[in-house]
Length: 117
Image (spheres, one colour):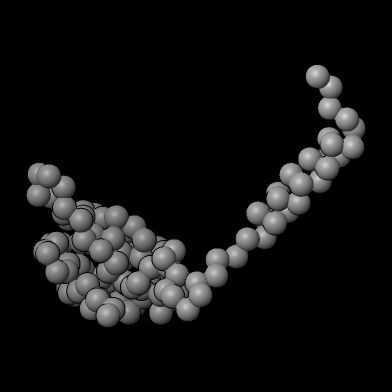
């Protein structure tokens, strides 16, 4: 069975229109929270650990633990374990609610941000 040329042209236009509109899709939250935006940590501009110049540039974004109980922290988007060093930062100890780090030779405590309600 052979398709008429006009049907092929119409199908081509429909597919082309769908591709154009898909590329320009924008999420409409309709007054609700956008599920693709994290709840925490959006107030500061992201700074890589190599670019950190002060303790206020560090954001503790999360803590995760494996089955063995070893924990990692997520600081400025990077996962670090105890003993890891990045730039002027060294992770000393990780607990359930925060981490102890050495930054520029001084011991500092990083705490998880309060949950947004």
